[in-house]
Image (cartoon, rainbow, N blue to C red; front, top):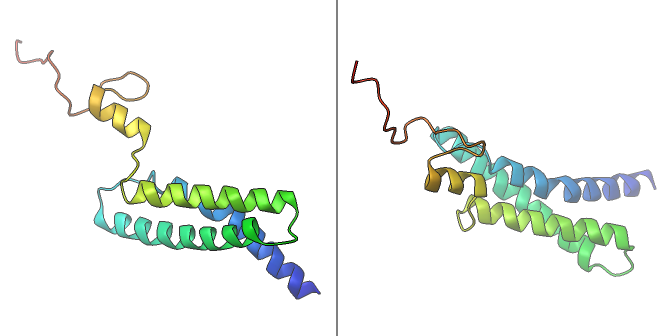
Length: 121
């Protein structure tokens, strides 16, 4: 019986945290290629495990409402993480920074066009 409880705890824990962790990993930068490769592999693995365990919980028969909710949450966040990773969806903060030239606090982004330079001195 202890082993069954352990399996249930692993399924619930993986389902609960797999999708959100994968979603948070999509915020890592793209620049070093090694980080990009690590991020893509990790997001894909966490998302696939989250989707599989989430569907198992969400669509299984004789499962109470709260584990079904955990399963649906896992499926939604895992799919969102895959869509962000494959660039189908874009992060809002990154898109605003590209279009306006300012970060989310309203400050100028380094490297953007700056009209006031110190060349006149």
